[in-house]
Picture 1 (cartoon, rainbow, N blue to C red):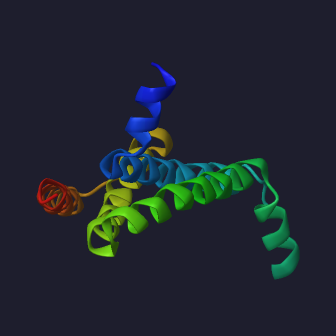
Picture 2 (tube, rainbow, N blue to C red):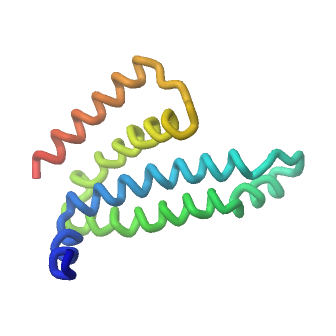
Length: 129
């Protein structure tokens, strides 16, 4: 991939919002991984919060969020909030899939139907360019 094609790819708002959305979902999974592996210590709220926030998984998840926000801001700048914001809903789908695949969480059928409904709505918005 040449620098020119990478530049044109990063100029496409749909590409940017997909990157932002994926990074947001990965950030959630990293945060879940971080808090799950931080160990259980009985301590004060502040001590627990600091221990969790400084765990490598949580810090990686927050970093993914920060990078995601950069891409999201660029999309809002180029296409507006009415285009960008509905893609935030896709994070629910990504997070549910990652929770199921990586952490073995149960997804009831009604929730799965709701996720399909979200996908349909976001697809319609994306097609409305």
